[in-house]
Amino acid sequence: MKAKKPVHRSGRRELFVHHFIECKGNATEAARRAGYSNNSIDRQARKLMIDPVVKAEIEKRYKPILEKMAVTEEAVIDEIANLAFTNVLDLIQVDAKDGTVSVDMRQIDRRHAAAIKELTVTKTGEGASLTQTISLKLADKHQPLRTLAQIFKALDGESPYVKNIQQNVFIGALGKQSDADVLQMAQKLLTGKGMADLVPATV
Image (cartoon, rainbow, N blue to C red; front, side):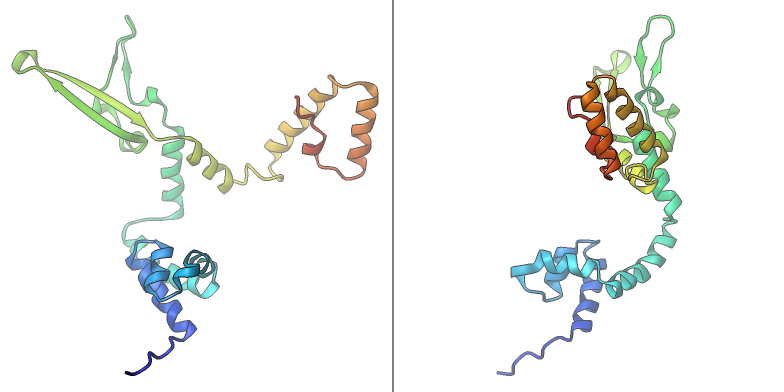
């Protein structure tokens, strides 16, 4: 019985890339199919996904697929924005007189329809007595908003907007402190403590 020849590291990475595309982005399964040890498969998958050679090859292979599907950075951000900013009032019609709510799917464009997570249509009765009830469930906004905030660096310490909020909270906190506490907080500021460390937890 002939022993199996060891797979060269670059060859195994090539197999990983191949299976990564085949598995539609499932890094753990791709690593398993490429022959990496099951004992550390998750760790190996994470290492492969930050490997510059692997990342470049995946990007190279995905590029024509994405171009064919017209997937661009702008399109991705736009779709995330659709999820984040669609409001229920974009999807319903409200009668100005009695406040009756109705849904006309013909009035919903693709941009707002992207935010519909679940659509249920229930029909009851027959003929002239046929009635139809539409139930809409919107996608969760938290993750899309967080993703957009990260894209535009709104959550890091360099955002002027966040800095302004931190400063306002800090100033508002001073009015609730004694003179001694304010002096102590000022000393911390002079020693290089961050703004977040100076805002009392009770504010």
